[in-house]
Amino acid sequence: MKNTWRFTDREMNYVREVLDSGFGSGTSGSMNNRFEQALAAKVGAKYAVTFNSGTSTLHAALNAVGVGYGDEVITTPLTVISNLDVILAQNAVPVFADIDPDTFNIDPADVARRITPRTKAIMPVSLYGLSCDLDPLMELGRKHGIAVINDAAQAFGTLYKGRPIAEIADITSYSLENSKHITTGDGGIVVTNNQAYAESMRKFGSLGYAALKATDGRIRSNKDIFQNPNYKRHDAFGYNYRMPEVAAAVGLAQTERMDFFLKLRADIAAMFLDAAKAADYLVPQKVPAGFNNSYWTVAFRYEREDVSWQDFRFKYIDFGGDGIYAAWALLHHETLVSSGAWKKRCPPLYDGIDFPPFPNAEAVQPKIMQFVNNYGSTDEAAAQVDALRKTIKHFS
Image (cartoon, rainbow, N blue to C red; front, side, top):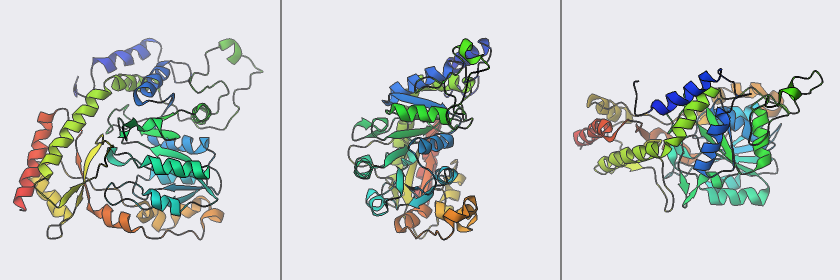
């Protein structure tokens, strides 16, 4: 099997177990339950629910905390389009708050300024593996009766002031897309310590089946009940966002090896950070005291004017680097938003809404450089780190 650092016989054995059982779906099989229990225990949460993406997890989370028509959801403009999409899907109003220019994460002080009587949820992002500043966000949530949904798509294994982030926010959402610390190819998993939220999210992701519980995604565990013409199957609204059993099998194996993946990324990140010390214009994403960074990528703010961002990247590639990734365009700069096309989702609600500038986000976004650290070993990563050293020396 290729890619043996990423996938081993453990994944194959669990997949074979699913296939040998008759390829059970998420409605009747147990692999999703096993994956959920293992992940919840690993991150420090009571409940976990699997989904087919890290977008559907966020959609279910907004629904669980009651976000609906006309409600406002505060999030960061420096994030993937999914955060905007799920707000629009609930006919809610996106409200952006500026970022901290050093951590790249949402600024709680600006969040506080943007809370109104219509605010229903705060959805920060723990960017690149670094936790958002949860204490002031949770304080705002408690003060105003607002739920906090931490989009931790990139933040498996992340700690906030020594605590696993999943213990803190009302809901924490992870992505299992193929570049993440652990993966099911595509997929997502959401965790919470709130039983009602867990049950709501499970039903939302599985067509609102009445039989679903916070800890169990099977709907056909009792055939005598299910195989009855008088049985009413659905007591809630939902979508088909389930994770297939074969994907959950991979996720279970990956969870059991999570510590290996986290340490490997941290070790590789340390190599990049050490190399970057020779360039004062590569300012690393700040990790505040008491935080850790699980380094989905190694992110810097590029603060050099005489060599362009792209020229630095091209030279890095010339020296054998895989490339340097830019940050997403800010959400309010994406064509979907700047063209006004997003307002067609619900014209009576969105017409007349425009977004102000966000000085920190707009200054930082063009400068962000991300170095991939998803390599199979420190030896494999060494060539990339060497390319960075050579690039820095070239422009010295």
